[in-house]
Length: 194
Image (cartoon, rainbow, N blue to C red):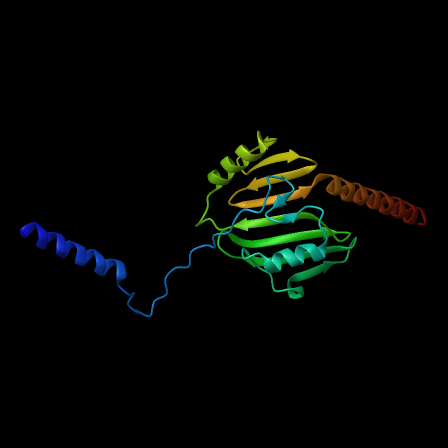
């Protein structure tokens, strides 16, 4: 009989704990990061569905639907005066603090994701990238880079991930050198006028 009473009281206590309703205290519970199924097929060109080379409209649609990003639409879009460049900047949710997407000639050529250091750490990302993309190309105390398929993926301290289209970046750099050379020639010709 004693065992039955101990069993019954233990069962009642367990039921009370399981079915108890939360008490309203006026305090809000911390919000857990969203649990979202993976969308990246393992390509170094992409984070989830954002992919180097996609159009501005494709990126806007993805940002609006993806719960990791707080994209509000065109107020988050900025135009730069040179070479048809566009920048989209938005805050994030959960693991993502902020994201920057840079477009050249209306194609995504680089994007940067600042991550929440309270929810994820540098070493975990490093291990993940090493397992997924193999040996790094460059390593320093400040950053690690991987390069594949003409894309550079960088993991930088404190906790930033950068994707870059190397071919487009080289083209932009070369065009910048050409402009500087023309400006230097123009200056030389102007100085000869004195």
